[in-house]
Image (cartoon, rainbow, N blue to C red):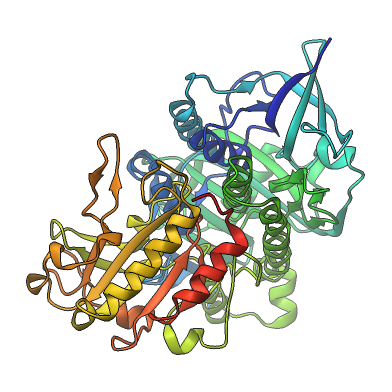
Length: 586
């Protein structure tokens, strides 16, 4: 039987696989998802959706349902014994630092999150199918011949029938026991601790006052973390189980432990929806790719404890990273070298995750707390200090063809860092006076974004020259007949009074003709001024640290990470950057 040819085979239909698939579907790329389950995920174990992931959902255009259905985490309460040994609330802190993101940290079952992504993927596919092959267990993945068009062979078993595929690329998203990883002979490097924890989703009847808040309990009977779930009643408990073996833990053991930790508050468990016990392990795969044709993502290449709420989020962001790059290569927008940056960026992120998890997990250990004299104040301070990381905002990618830092960056835009996500900062859209976050305005639709920052005084002279040069540059990479913003999306941010600006006085580069009727898009110009309908408007230049007189050109990648910072008149360096990561098609 001849193998089926397909451009990409995604092994595993979890968060990483579905996110990558959304990118591929957006670009019309043919793919198959091989999923061992008989159907879509019904009960998910992960539930925390960090701020950065909510931003990604927003940029993909699928955040509305997530924000509507999820539990919004606003505060964290810290409980520990008082001088009499009674459990008392010691501190309350914001869950996310004010100003870190315009999106909240939310909680929603992974099954529902996957459903949202699956629906979006189906919507984007031209034939209206999901491309998911259920009940298909991947048996092997290998490269047969790198010189041919479809060098990757994937073999799977579905209900006793062997399925064979030939693909240009394969993505391993098949979890901690990854068949893809094992097929390639790669190993997980790291270790397991002797720290055992239990987790359970329950409907509690209790008089504990913070049962609907995220809370950390360090009692004399042990440590516990509360994560309220979506709805008004369901709650997740993470329970430390020192001296226990995970395989010997029972549901009743967890219930008894929970009651002791909450004493003197009553805690009756009306129903246990799901529970498990696990040993904390931190491991990273020794390789993330085979010949840049087969790539590992998610738990297939990194495992860690769940307490920092990173697992599903980091996996999803793996898929977000590899998806747009693979789509650009397969559509001819970018050279294959772009795929090499996935390994550079996400291996670095995975190692940072493991290092953070080792340190963060110790905070919750009773033995570590006693041995090191950890106080409730210290615990709170460290927890709050880790907030930028746990919100997903600390990722910083190293220098590559997609990320080009320079020694002048801080003098041009001191509030930006090349390699980090473009921050949330509100501005007012010139065309309709609508205030909105620039982060939201830069949709993750596969385009690069070039943001030009200048003062209103520059609009008649310097800006005209800069815009002309940028327009010539964009044409170099835009296919003949395509919209002017097909590859590079221009955005102008002006510091000045909106009432003194007229659209007709601004360069045409910022008003590309787009859409079915090729009409002028007037929504790409923003003004940095105060607005009565949104707080913090009028602070773009100050937040980003951009000198109003000097101005700046900021290149933002399709995944909304800052790629390059240049002075307003340094168009040549902008052109040089794009020549290194885009194919000349214009």
